[in-house]
Length: 365
Image (cartoon, rainbow, N blue to C red; front, side, top):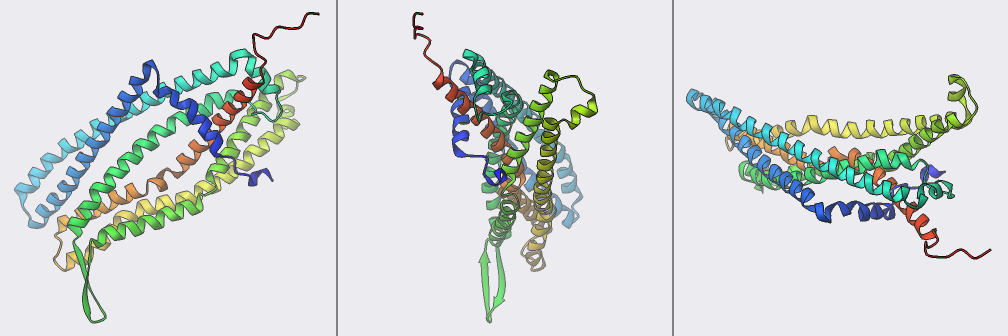
């Protein structure tokens, strides 16, 4: 019955952020802010290079359509410079992102350890009824995921927003208006590629939210089962000596292992369903963009270069709009881990509140 209870709540997430955001304050706060500034600069620069590559796509195929050897050669020489710029920016962004994640994880883990170990909180937390089991797992593993994912997700979201804004303009400009006959009238639909990209993105995003709506809950239950299995295995050394087969079949370990396998099967089903949507979108988006441009090309309203430019812009817009589709599993995993860290912090808050004041004198015997 407990599987029906949502595991990720707003209160643990708020408690996680209350502690985690301390990394952005204090004497060393200039480091995360400087790294964020570097990442924003990389995102904007990458967008400029991506836009220039989009124009290169148009110019190259227009030259190919004209059979202009000199222009083709010029575009061929330009491509390595654009590719090198993109590669250097991507490598710099990876360095900045991983540096930020390493420092944030180090800070959060140190803060959690200090709270957990101070005043023997770890003893009273383990002894308290209903408290989280195996806090070591939450400090080591969940804190890692909770600090790794946010910077990836935020930088990716920023890049998606800027990419969508830029290439929607390209689609509106290059795609032009689609003319069609209806009710004995010639009707025009301006910016039809933009509206088509919006509709396509709504379908794929809606499908992902539908099939993956329980993923955060499933990941939370799987992580809890993993921590309980580690807790059961860690306690084996305190029991009587037994063979490996007997240890694997002991009641606590056997039950914990069965729970891990059960939740892994549920998580497998969630990943299969979300992969159907994300992989299908990856395959179809560029092709849908090309097909939508065919009427304009046949009517001589678009050149071959503009068709490829619009198709590439359509794929870029889909990649931006489908940020949630591509990142939903990662977002669900982060929400689960951050919630578990928040639950640990809430448990430590309760222990701290129940601790008697240190300045209270014991009564004389």
